Amino acid sequence: CKQLYQDNLHYEMLKSLIAFVDEEFEDMEHRHLQVCSRRDTIRNVDVENEEDRSKGEAMVTKMLSVMEQLKNYDHWTMGDIKLEVSVYNAISNFYYRIETEESLNKSKLYEEMARDLFRKVGDEGGAIIAERNIAAAEVKLSGDESKLDTIFNLDCLRERYENLLEELGATDTITIDAGVTFARRLADECHAIEAERLLTKLVATSRRVHGPDHSCTVYATSTFQNWCSVRGVVVKGEGDRIFEALRYENDGEMCVVEGPFLADGTRNRSEDRTLTVPSTVIPAPGMPVICIGLEGGEAHLNGKHGETRAFFRENDTFVFHIYFEEKDLEPAKIEPKNLRIIFELPPPE
Image 1: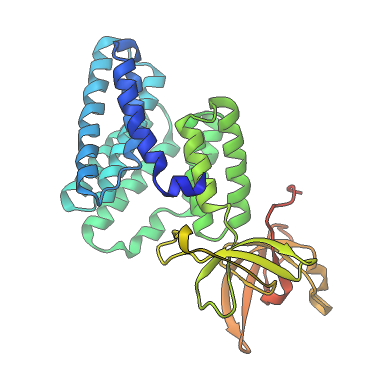
Image 2: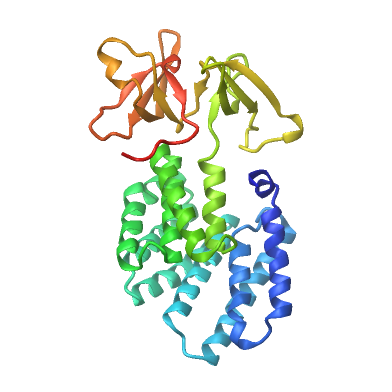
């Protein structure tokens, strides 16, 4: 499924969904489905493709038009306001990715509209995220993108998610989407274990409450597949290319890997190689690992699991800073020979 998603099958299915919804649900009572199908699709538009970009513009026009029709047709409920916010956010994201001066100004405009609605319904956490998105557009317009990292910081995203948990509950789609955004940022910062545990919970919650085909579930599942399910390693003799570790064999002495990944993070499956190599492969940053074979003052870390973050060379070998899930354990510097990839996280303690 992951490979099919990467090959853009998901996007093609969403486009087909638009055609189906438009044909089957023309009456006003179901017109919101036309908005939802386009909102979910526009997030996957390839903005570098001129034809797709033009279709994205048409989706924007259609969504805004249908929402105005719906407002005139019936009382605009809290659920409708949530839909409106999500549409403004999706439109803002579409224009943000185009990255022209005109599109960035449009992105800022729609994010401001989303922020105002967040405040109208009392979701200050959502308003904070919208403010960050507005600031991101302004930074890109200024040409100084070095400030982007400070805008989308973990503390802000964590606060947003925790606020929504309290205000809307764990099963609300806005809460789940915010959790996925937070988990992606965790993964970006090599907080692999927290990201994987959170996404696992979000996928299960969304699947149970909203069903496997709901856009929220699809978004959470695809994020898990693309950000948390792969165990990346560097193999001796293969340069700095990343392979996917699949399993250990021969009582952990050998590791089966597949790949490599291309420079853009994708895979050319037709040229993939499957190798069986010594288990002393070098984990990529942000991988969950377990410590083995440590002696002396580090022996207490054997069997403890953590994640690879910063790494450096020391005495002609790689050394990782390992951050442990147990909060009372200090980070430690561990060589790859004393680390093994964790393919399935143990239950949280």
